[in-house]
Figure 1 (cartoon, rainbow, N blue to C red):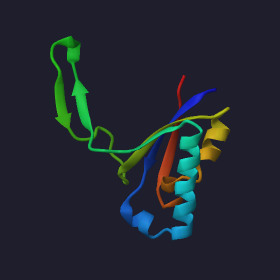
Figure 2 (cartoon, one colour):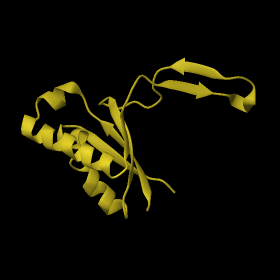
Figure 3 (cartoon, rainbow, N blue to C red):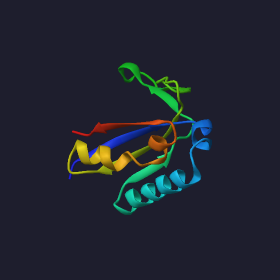
Figure 4 (spheres, rainbow, N blue to C red):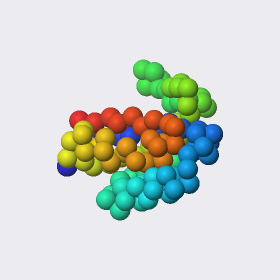
Length: 107
């Protein structure tokens, strides 16, 4: 079955202003995705890694991407197609709590 990488963006303010019943249902959707075999994690502090021309590893703390919302987490899910992947993530916390979820097909 095809795999998709999802990137969730959201912040505490958006989460807090979402009704607790909606948040609870979103967390239940995360649990359902985990039960289906999805690898889901909350984002930690990133580092950038470079090894230009294989001449030495350079590691810098901090994110490369910038967005108006912080990256909250990642998941690798399976779905029959992009439409099913969209449906699966449309009810997760970042999607319902005033954030956004990107869905990237893995080829």
